[in-house]
Length: 434
Image 1 (cartoon, rainbow, N blue to C red):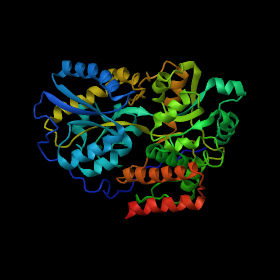
Image 2 (image 1 turned 45 degrees about the horizontal axis):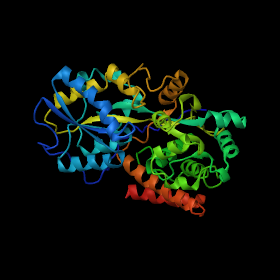
Image 3 (image 1 turned 180 degrees about the horizontal axis):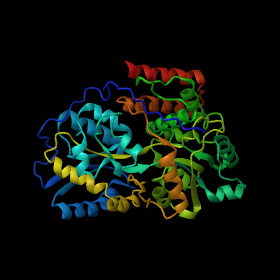
Image 4 (image 1 turned 90 degrees about the vertical axis):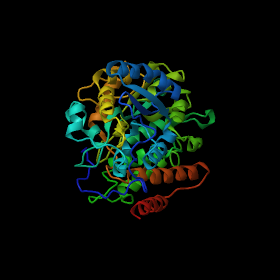
């Protein structure tokens, strides 16, 4: 099977987050002193408090090395994008901020983040330190990025080892085998299903719209950078995913209320599902819910037997950006350099279950070398970035929410047809093109 890249080389109009402007100078959230920085971190651990516990000693080490104190605030994913947008429009923001790497081009288009050109990358040790595909998420093609990769993530399919052994089932290598295994492991009377999905999460749903479309050989954007959600490969990929609950009945309808990935992970860990599709940072949550590492395993998310592409994940992860009008650019660059150093990457890789974003970096998120190698192979060879276009954030919300609604229809006994998917995708596409 061949892999198909979705990067468009055509210049794109900056139409991303409507109404956002660059920060005003003297942002009250940033620090005028060269000895201070304000840092907004995303929630990577088991809780906001857990993130603070993990990051505080790391940031203290940065202060010891540089003399720069860091004011840390950890923000939940439900709030982070809105907080960043508000900071850009109001000028009341931090010096440095974590962003979802899928937001890279959309936030770049606002003009609110610092461009990282040759001079800045010299302070960061050079562009060639970073995994090229991960660095590409920091900005539109052929532009200076406004963020760099911080934590790498990739999807895998986790399965309950004992359930598979008891049923005499081998781990699936194709979509069709996965569905058959899920059917065999579903027992509705016992409340056990073959799979659990975060079917009420617009972020998870849009990721699988993308992955399934990519497996079908379909792109979500035209060569000139316009949204293209209605082609057969996109529609068929979405319907294939919906049919896990609708046609195959291997997903509990209650999963339509799972509005974040942690809920499906918890369901899996509690023995309510035999499989989940989740990013590699699921390990910590699975173990926190009582499963030991030998009770679960992970394999690449399988594609259909006749798939055009063996894509198993979008290129997931967290990027790190500097707000454009920070009063402490030099300190912020030192902070980016520190957070992406080999030592810090290794130290944070375990508690945050992240993959290294540095070329030849070693994964530390698990002691299972086979699992680590699998996720690194997916991240490096079988992951594609979501469309590197300014409207990507609008794709996430429009397509993801449409899928939420379709899963809700299925969960309440309704039927979603292929025509329904076409109509929903046309509406999402039109909303962005407008």
